[in-house]
Image (tube, rainbow over all chains, first blue to last red; front, top):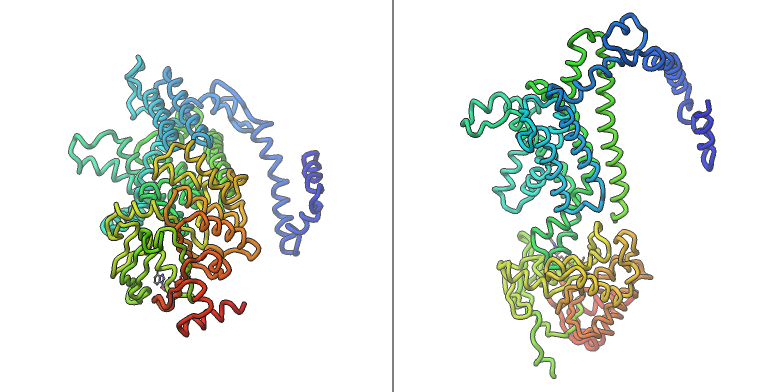
Length: 363
Length: 250
Ligand SMILES: Nc1ncnc2c1ncn2[C@@H]1O[C@H](COP(=O)(O)OP(=O)(O)OP(=O)(O)O)[C@@H](O)[C@H]1O
Ligand SMILES: [Mg+2]
């Protein structure tokens, strides 16, 4: 009641009265009104049930699933009992702190990348490289007295974050090179970039990853095969780069021809023009689509389950799939959905903020 | 010093330019000496822009030769770079870089091309921004300025490279009438400082005030080239008379 009153008051203040807006938006015709009433009734029916399930009747912690059985509420105890499995996967239990710190390092790098003072190519590259090495050596160990943990044991949230950031870090430069290649004045380069982009974009991600994980080892010499995780990441990065290259190309095409002419007339050479005039404007033009691509890529990381990696969705699966928690699958998926939501939502909010900020410097 | 003793800044000899099969420039001959101010006029599509864009190789010519400050323009990239460093250009659409502030627009090329330090480049840039009477806007983005202000920034940006020749392609045609004079004032002052200038413009008041020579073009050819007094008072060709009567009637 009070929340509604507050928002009503806010709407009244200097705007159309809340009631008028409500009527205009939801009850304009009898048709609208009917749909609105049905929806409203559904929400009123559902909300108490949902609150009851999620909060009032929920079991928050328990050593095993017994207290949950027959209960009307959510069994959050599965999260309390199994959150480590969900977040860290099969990583050695006594080394979980390493995996946690590694995730933190990635989050810190991502957050720091949002600080405009660090938006210099050299600073950003150093930041990402530093964060990446920190992550890698914390996870893998084998140095500074940390025990060695092979990538086959990496899992959960840490693996999801690792795949996502590695794909972004490798894929972005590739995307830029491909986009510039496709616009090149040299026909051979233009043709080659176009062929690669169009071929990869025509394939489903699953096929690309499957090929990299399962089929490539038969075709490559032993010394080139490497770790399965890295093969998958390279393939994923290529897939990302080809989609992102087309996005950047759209941004390039939106740049006014006069920009290049002015840069040429000032005596700037190709690389200076590209780096200081063309790319910053192409990025700005393609920012909304780029953020969207990041969101898609983050969600697509869950596909690696199929080729035998234990990322966050797979570890969630394991969390309710073993022991006596089998009935608590909904709770586990709600928890994982919240994790995805937190990442994707902050990503898109940040994108909206950037867009607003960049519009300031636009014509 | 007589005119003929001054060094040749720009020499076009028998220049022709084709867009596909369409010939935009036909056997153009033009010599501009250092310190000279040339005003180019002519009907739309007559090749004025094409001609001055050939001088800094924004367009490549196919026949004849172009020498700028003694260097021949050809496919040699070194020559092109050297010439672009000495030739500034101001466009009809300003073409400021929207993602950079006014000051950054002015310091970018001096820092990258002339390898000036940031501090020196900024000091120089502020000097030129003062000269175009706009120093208080240095921290703003182009999108926050009026058209006249943007064009003055564009002039300052070109001057920051300390060019020996300035090209203007209809610098006031995209401006609202009340902003034209603020840009022309800056150009008059620049002309009085002895800069070599080639201006495509239909501002005949400006032309009378500063031009050493008028060049009239039609259909890709230079039809008439004369000092302003003779050009305006006793035009030789019918085309020129017709053009002048049209442009001076309003
Ligand atoms: N990139 C191009 N491709 C094909 N034709 C072109 C190109 N640029 C110019 N032209 C043609 O060349 C001719 C001369 O153009 P130019 O822009 O030099 O004329 P202008 O005298 O500057 O005219 P305006 O007063 O309209 O600016 C025109 O007929 C034009 O259509
Ligand atoms: Mg023109």
